[in-house]
Image (cartoon, rainbow, N blue to C red; front, side, top):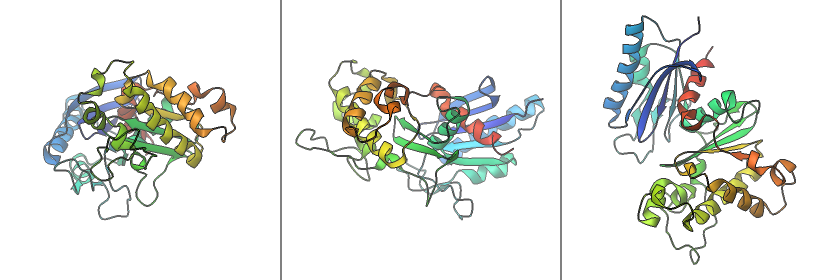
Length: 298
């Protein structure tokens, strides 16, 4: 009999809880808004406990991929905490502790983007690759890097959405929307930044709106930076903003332009449409990634 695992995609807007043994064996799923830490975590615990009780099974492990910033260091006193987030009510809150004490099963914990990257590496667009990057561009911007088959952490964890991009204020006077850095990557292209810039939700804009060319410009600047920094074998772009699929050919063209022939690889120069790609797991990348994280505990 297959082991059965739990997963949580803990987003700043919503939590997705899932019970599965693989991408084609999803047994239960529940989504609910991210409210207060206590209420949200209690809902997650109730979901997993009810499934175990009603089906007379014990989950083998749980994977949690969370929004952040967070503390991923198992030796730290605040391991499993959400730390300096601008999400109201969640700053310095313990996410992992209550899950451990209430579920009493092994738990894998990482960033939401690392979780999605792990899922895409096991079952999706990066299957068979050892070095690749996953970005979510939506409510915020985050990036996860898989290096030599393992997620990159470091001092804490990468905050790829907060790199500074070349921003010509004469050409584009928008000041950005990041509460910490103003016009960083996230501050220029995340969903709330686009709404502030255009005065309406970005998904209301027509696909030929000139604003999409500007969004692609900033994303391509970031991609050229990350290609030079990490030399990934593939880059995956997910999240709500990237549902605007007209962005991909614009990003492809501009990334090649901004690299300006410096990175001499046919993978980029001749096949960039296979190099910067959408997630194969679609909007399930995060939740299935959390299942993949739980599976890796065995």
